[in-house]
Amino acid sequence: MNTFTISLKPLENHMSSDIYISSALFSRVKCKHEFTLTVGSITKEVKATVFQHRECCFMMSEALFTDFRFPYETHQLRGIYEENTFRLGPVISIVTEVREDEEHFGSISVFCKEFVQACKELGCFCYVSKLSDVKSLSPKGYVYRADRWVYSDVPFPGIVHNRIHARKTEQTADFQTFKTFLKEHDVPFFNARYLNKWTVFQQLKDVVHLLPYLPKTYQLRSRQDFLDALELHDDVFLKPVHGSQGKNIFKISKKEKYTLDYTTFTQTYEKEYESLYDLFETLYSQLKRQGFLIQEGISLQTYKQCPFDFRILCHKKDDLTWKITSIVTRVSKPGNFVSNLARGGDIHPPHQVLTQLYDSKTTRHILSLLKEIAIEICTQLSHPCELYAEFGIDLAIDQEGKPWIIEVNVKPSKQSDSSAFSVRPSTKALLDYCLHATNFQFPKEDLR
Image 1 (tube, rainbow, N blue to C red):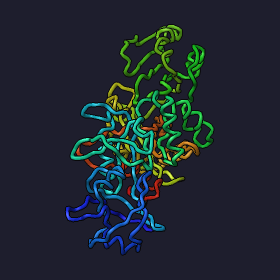
Image 2 (image 1 turned 120 degrees about the vertical axis):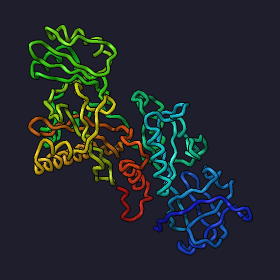
Image 3 (image 1 turned 90 degrees about the horizontal axis):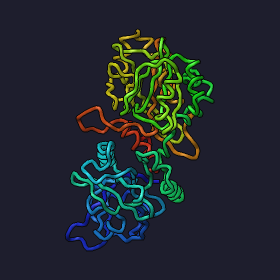
């Protein structure tokens, strides 16, 4: 199999044939003048004229560009040649919700531009689409051209990245039909769906070597579950099963009275309660609106008197291997008990924080153990029938330096902590996986 970078260019004015092949490419692959050209789901038998050019490229008519559903402009792609057939790609689709305003794709708008930029630099074609856009072999999508998103015909994707924000959307019949359609056409689809907190806990608690790092966790199904948990633990958190970004969390502490703290609720709650019954009745109207779980409170280590945790981004390197792409320390805002950036948390390099609390040997040991736990979590959550290629793992340490598993994020935030535009390692890691999954990766290529 011959793999190479190739340019796809519009015809020059003096050219009369539909397709030309450069002398460099013609000599490299030693193809015939008549060959098969495939992009996405479109395959055409073509007869090409050779023209003198030192680069590997095709020059094609506007009609042929339209047939392959590409915008009529120059594209850098990757090519695979075998058995007199050229396959060009990869074609990558990011599926998400679309808004008709300046920020088309909400909180991932910057990420989408960043990913497209990385694709252009590395010879890939990427577009963003709605769920309804990719329901046939002739999809439409948003292509970034001349500093704006243009809705147009696009090639059928070779891989689809799921960045749908709304969990409810993933429960719809349309979403299930979409997944089935992609599966029927052998299109990899990642990350397959949200995993709720209880599902994650259930999967990890059966792993003997991870169990010591899991806080005690219970389903909140009744008042008795609530009372039982507070009998066992002095501090507990009530977390929405489908929650994210540190929203709608209650913290309850058992002291002389029962104290309550919480995040993001518009309703105001009293801070102290004489009995658990009073506290439960106060919270009941909120708790019944969505599923909650109860999690044992951990006395987290602090930095400058503020609790902190670690966000570890992990990406799938190939079919079996996971790799850590980045790790940051998130320090909570003074007075807060969550460290999410959306709740005012700050980012620091892990060594900066840990070396203020421990010697260098202990710091290295803690970081090594955190990374080992994160990789093991990814391995355990990998599923043979559902594809996941990215996890955001939230781990913390207690006052004794022991690690604890706080959260697993299937669609980690794509908000950048830098004002300068650059392609982040996590974005390169996602693209690296797309190249692997579509078989367009060059030998020994690793973008990270």
